[in-house]
Image (cartoon, rainbow, N blue to C red):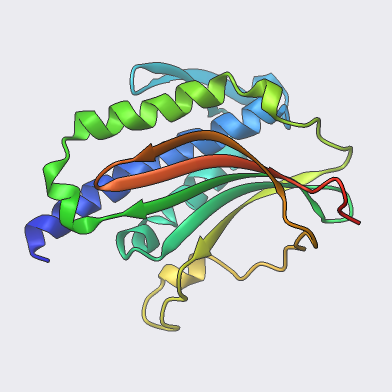
Length: 201
């Protein structure tokens, strides 16, 4: 891979990170986790989207998304999840972004094409209220990244932004609801919802 491919795959990764920041904010807004006054309307990719107006919420979402950039650029990120937990720390709902970037094809895609494809995910998210479950009382949420492999320890400061998770897992396979998918070069992206199985203890 030459430096031109690196530049183009870096642009794809940056566009994806920017998209994830907006998508994560939309998911938190969609779930009604915070009052609507904690958000403000903004334009992104020629769409009206929600942006966190509360500084701590905005900083958390932004730092979670931008903290993924070096890992996405290296092809380490397999999935990014927005997970909602019950009071006893058990996941009740997961929004999963499953992604693959092919760096060798990144040079052939135009930014407008990629934005058009990602825009369709935001449109679909904005009308997905019927797919989500009501949140239990005293719940919480977090952004979790699932890596294909762990980066080398001490190789850089990148790993310091993320910590290993102790998230409880479901015992049974989850119920999966597809939301949207994109299968093209250089980006393959799937968005789906996971809920616990009806037989989950």
